[in-house]
Length: 437
Image (cartoon, rainbow, N blue to C red; front, side, top):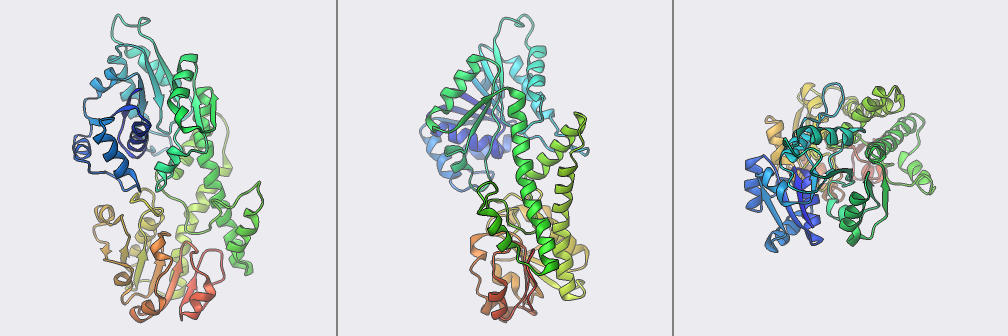
């Protein structure tokens, strides 16, 4: 099939590369001249395991190309995915300006049947407005003569595992309103042999927001349980293990720590709260989920402060800057928020991350970046693990103790056993675990 992906951000680039790998002819189009220029030189704008290889392979096989000529790309394709950004506005709503602008461009360049698909995460009823926008902006004389359909195909790609998630999905959701759109999308995804849910567009739009909001709720729930565990002397990791063995609950997303971040959960939660409010429902539960998440970040700063008495002029080593491992994405990263809080208290922060330091320097120019975990820990009063990269799970604590001014570990992701850390001569601070000194 001939496919155009408009928007070469995280979702668009991964989707385009994977669809090309399934044998389709894919054009990834974007108005960002610099990004497209770099992609044509096979320079990836993001770090995502496996993405570089899949892009190179499909460009070489001439199934994947990159272009700034969105108009031409629209004319060459039958299936057009809208994968532009939908950032949050101050009131929590998703900014759909990019989606509307793309719909206008598509309308003005329709030269035959087109299936226009929402791939960006958008609020319910966006499909209606995309269809309306296309109809209004069709070239004069073409209204009623050119056929098109609008569909919703939300993405469920986890950063760090996006290629595998696309190729081996838990489910594929198709929101369609016509038999032609249904058949085209079923044919497109037939090679994946996945569970496919075909529904109406509005239901498909809500599935995405509801899914991410539920996962954020699980994280905030276990973080709330962690608060209780700290107060009564229980271990939240053991509690989560016990809960997770119940098949109705499951263990995934029950890891207490410094909270969730990234481009999806915070934005989608805000958007869903706003969607609910506009429909006349006050989603108090999700407002509480958001509040708990914010408390986790300020909570770890308070614990470090309590352990050190005064933060001013204390040296804090932070391991991990990205919001999760296997990505360089710093959007809504708990680590970055915590660093800002520490710096506002006068602490001297030194940090290391395997892949996110270049982006971190652009956001926080004053942040001291180090070559590895041990350089960051030199003369530090506290070592904070903020992202659970695998290389941070096997640190040499004997070496760290010799390097650090004070042997204090703030385990923001609960990747170590407190008693083992104590045996290494460290004081231990975790989330929902009894502090060991």
